[in-house]
Length: 101
Image (cartoon, rainbow, N blue to C red; front, side):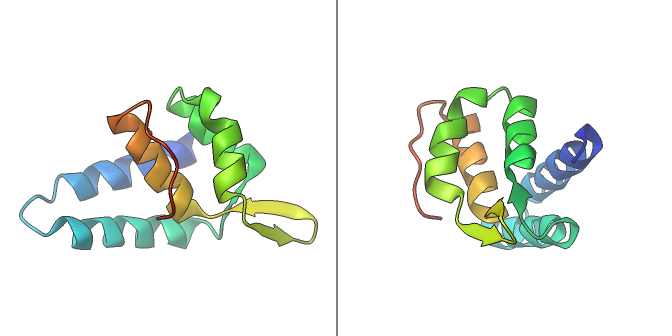
């Protein structure tokens, strides 16, 4: 996936955060629905690009250990929900640990 794709994700998430008049849960569900329409799951390369975009390359091994949960035709696929939630946590606190979302 390309940089434009990650910019679209960033724009969707920023839009969700700006909807402060609605409950946070509703806004985030809406954002993840929009992201989900764009992608079935993240490949290893997608995750590397996303982490690189947010300057979080050091988190790759943790993301791999925690969120690399699917195998389709020999291709490892990461859960977009978990990866994005973890990236959000790291944006708030660079020392945030992984967890089940």
